Length: 247
Image (cartoon, rainbow, N blue to C red; front, side):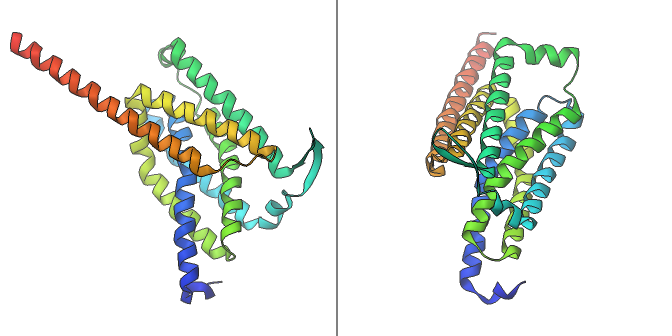
């Protein structure tokens, strides 16, 4: 199982796959962070860890059921002149779910329903976990198919998945707290998820969208928003300073 240890090419493949798994996990972290933000503060950390654990378990389960996963690439039926496989069905349904959920979250944020829910009763813990589990399966499918295309050794895939999940565990709370503290970042993250959902749907119809473009757009948008946050903080500090001087 570990005969690849002496191979430099295998170590390069492991490093590459780990990096890709971490990047592919960004969507998952953002979605989990937004969902657990609807829970009471004392339940958020537990839900976050359970959500990431579900992501790890779903990826490992798909890896060990790799024969079944690769069978999903076989054509099930045709639609609009496109051959639709089991993988395509999962991507389309997952993308539609992500589009609906992200749109709902944006609507709640803009209409103030999120605050009303916070006053009248917290989101259901079990319902949040179910939503996380559904998207974990969709994101894991894409992740596992990427892994299979890059390396031949199952042990390398498992190590890469475990390493990426560890990074997610350490980064998730910081990302979640930052998203909760900055409403504009949350809105930007939800917009990203709409873009990812749309991408999943069109990929389900065999229209390939290079992931590099998506992640570049995300990184550029976040960089611009970070500058805006810094500018707003600078202005706020200046206002507070003027107030303290006049008093």
